[in-house]
Length: 252
Image 1: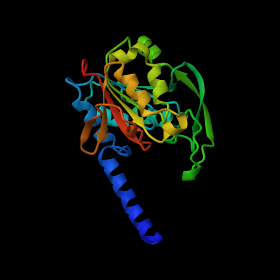
Image 2: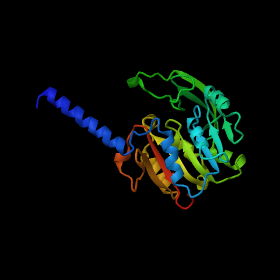
Image 3: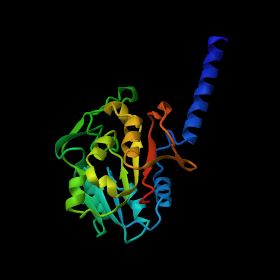
Image 4: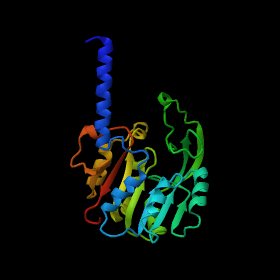
């Protein structure tokens, strides 16, 4: 096979590989907020009363959650001052949406939020290396961090957590470790996994064990709905934006 032909064949196979992965939900994680909330709702027996949006950015996910009902309380955690202002403008008149201007992690304290621009959706507590994409993480902002368990005990009075979404650009596992006993109050939890986890050196296997040891089933959101991941395999380590759902069958 000539070099030119081999290049064409390889390109075609690469395209097929990406399309097959996408159909499985691997890499199916951008601009899919409506589908994500729709999938989560199907796991609940009753209408949700409390939802938590961790990494709220400018509020697209919370706005979709609001469509689930006017009686739903929504707590949004967002550390970027640029986005906090936008969230206030967007939801300031909604008495059931609480905006908490902090990042969540496994310890309370202070941290630095890095990004390519103020308010960027790529903002992370890790200064990512994205030179291959022509992106420089040269914007830094001092932020406050909280453990979710502390907030849940104090401000939420240990309420049941119907829906939780975590999208914090690679620090999802740290946030989960900060849940402490609050994880036992969760019914359905969505988290993102992808390229950010390369920078934070966290793997899908870490999430798998975290949730399985606590009685959750894991699913991946696909273009066709939720697909249960019945057991861990190394091929689940797919570092392109993918949305996963942990469901506690005893509560959801």
